[in-house]
Structures are given as C-alpha cells and as structure tokens.
Image 1 (cartoon, rainbow, N blue to C red):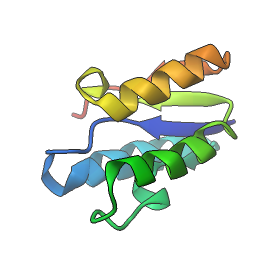
Image 2 (cartoon, rainbow, N blue to C red):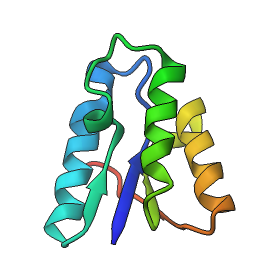
Image 3 (spheres, rainbow, N blue to C red):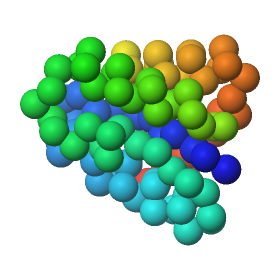
Image 4 (cartoon, one colour):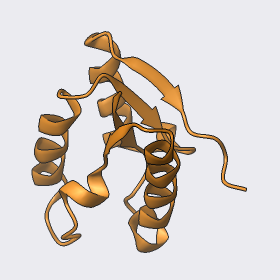
Length: 98
C-alpha cells in the first residue's frame, strides 16, 4: 500500500523529522511504499504554502494516510487528513513513540 505520513512539523525540534523517519521505517519494514514531507521538502527554509502544495501533490497519489501523534495541533496535517478523508483514503494512526 502507498501511505502518506502526516504530522506536526512547525515549531518542533528538527521539524519532527526523527519521528517521521521512525514511522516511515516501521511502515516500510511492513512492505509499504511511504511518502513523507521530510523527503518531499527537505529544505526547511521554504514557505509553508510552497511545501503544502508539493505535499498535497504527493498525498493524492496514496491509498492511505498515517497520522503522527500531535497531528491535531498542526494546520497542515489537519488539512492533509481532511483531503484524505474526503477522497476516501484509509486513515491510520501511528503508535505513540516508545
């Protein structure tokens, strides 16, 4: 399955990339193809709107979205979740980091 990982980034240490990387590794180990903003937009100096446009282009190519803890506090992740739900994509939730 092709899965898009979404979660909070802005204002989080290292843009939350370590959590994105960990969830991506977990899902890839299960055999999924994983798309994540940390790979789409590695340049953290780009503006939010530019990053979201690139992210959404990739999101719509997926069958599912996996939401990281704290997604509800992220304007971008909430938007990605809304789009995924409206498109009938499967919505899954990443486990809390241990």
